[in-house]
View: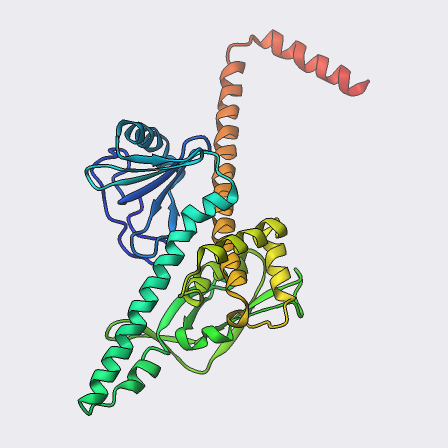
Length: 331
């Protein structure tokens, strides 16, 4: 059972309410589709739980949701706050816009508030230091520029360390791309551990990623570019773009054809749409992996069942079946 966020690697916390799944302080579940997520308190991302750990936990979440009196529901989504501090988000049959508002809207607003607080604090400290005769403004301007903010993998599995300074060089281009588009990721060849965080060293290099690898990398990098989050209207506009494109690859291809290939210079709606669809695509591929595992398990069970069935059939019947098969094949 995982205990850390797959996006920010922070501890997901624990609960004493859901006996079969004591991880997380906020759980989202979809009983119809059999999905269970742990919502990270730090980055607010949704972590899809492993297949083998979710079924009994989902049933328990459903019972807890209906047993509590402190819940708020629409036709499609409900929120329940349990006295023990656990929050449950029940997913019904929401339209994409409503689901996006619940899943991403609060996180984008939270980012905006956090960024305002950070910026205001930096300005206040700089002004106070200047008044005291201390010149530390250069620290706030350049001090964190080489901090590693994302780590992604290329097609060969090589780890690419992306630093804060290089986010402005992230590009989405349609040139020389087999799939019609590629994500050009700037990275530093060497990563060193600092006092409070890791930082990148060496001359900036770039790697062109395509297909699922590019989408997965975008899901890790774009939240750093979208640090100011988005308003409700921007989220709605982003969802409209996703609905119009209908497929993640097509949305990335459309964005690569805009006037500027630099992702930072694209509109906030486009960047938010790319981030949202990248996360949903990564989750979809994870589910495909689960379906493949289920199919493999089913085939193994079917093979065992077939062997068991044949043990009950006399040899004379088996011979007769083989003869009939040969006759049918010959005809």
